[in-house]
Image (cartoon, rainbow, N blue to C red; front, top):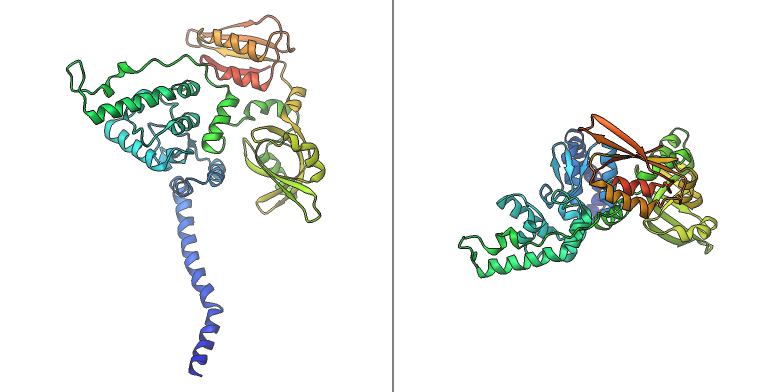
Length: 421
């Protein structure tokens, strides 16, 4: 009877005591967290991203939060990044350890070597100083795709083509360190320290902007430096296509959403309803963020062939804003190229500041916008005397002018900008 009496007292307390204790603990943590985020937002976000270092979906969400808060996110850099996310002059520097398939400990050791012996001078200096047991071909390729070597060589395609050379340099340097060989020239430096043994890099044209971003997506898990739709936006706006952020902002006042929206497919998940009808959740991204659209069976049947990761689409959507989460349903889906073609620019004006760009420019115009294949006019604007004088000349004939052409031309060394006209 005494035991039952004690149990009854404890049972009554359990009805509210457990919840009360947890509420107090969570309230304290929530207050502390809110204080840190309000007063040290950059440090708070860097720490939060480090805690979810291997969770690409969470990192993508954090990136959107940074954009809303006006906090810059710098790309990974072999000479500036650390293994974790860090604060860099009021911004956040992307973590080397967050690049896919590189290994956190390998990146931490890479940083320790850099701090002990100074910044890496070039990709071969990096190769000679790395441990080949920790960093393999896949690691180097993903670092190149993510842009981690951009501070040493901005041509990512050229760095990728040199991965085998880097692996060879690393192996030779490791062997020299292990055998403690000295220089044949009488110095104390090992052969690993002799820059002369590095072969010159092969001449390779850099990736086109679309390819560059696709590789970056593979290595990071989302688009970091830019977005595939950036070059399409002028034509999309002429076609009255909104960004996700703009559409939600308009719908926030009325609670309902309706309009055209563009996005690049990230992930597709198909399901079946209780009645056996197929439907799909499609995750897409645009320059304003990541969002999800539901496609029911009638739309899914016609759109399925376009639902491929990396493909850009234009969707007619409708939905509601519930709290901060918009719920969107697709009414129609079509490839972005058709919408862009209907709203293409009349021509391009290319601004140059050095003649070295002309051979590559000629090649890209021939490959991407062959003369006579379109109706667009192209003109060159040459900036002379450090920009004090301009010389403009029209190229003969007409060209196929598209966002891909504009993006390809903008990526060339010596091309300052490309304007639609």
